[in-house]
Length: 239
Image (cartoon, rainbow, N blue to C red; front, side, top):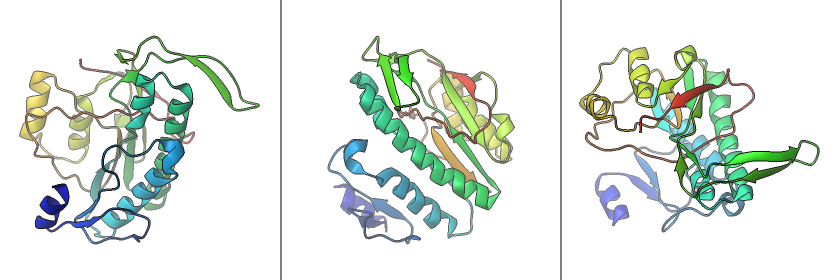
């Protein structure tokens, strides 16, 4: 039982964020669904509100923080070859990105990085119209593809995330920027070419090393990038 396990570790647990006001007492966990969350068309503005709650709660400590946010159901819709679903999920992810960018602009000392671990579905835009906000797309698979995915960044040291990159270079550059040595998990991943995914990463002044060694870090996300971000770059997956 996750609730009991987290409570025994002194986590404050809620089952909805509707009645929660930031900042919340940390450590904090929100278990808002028995399984997967509803799709974007049904869950409303949950993701942007959750990002806002997390940022305000972490920032209130005054210690700096590292936050990773995933727009996981973009991948689900790609697997299902659902153009409308992909668009809905990407727009929802875009709204979450805006919350992070707004904070980064106010703070002035925050780096935001957006990327994906892979493309799903072989989605190709065939036609569309700006006038009526429509898009026509085709898919060529129900699985993942080797298509390059973009990486975008905003804020201090954002120029470090340019050009074609291996996905495992992302955490290395983060730690180099913060003056930290590679922990054992990163060294293991680099040796064995595992995937370290930094999908929507936000940190302020401080990076807490992750101690989960010998584990493949995965997620599934792909975001329409906000107009204010820098020039898009390509990143090549390691697998």
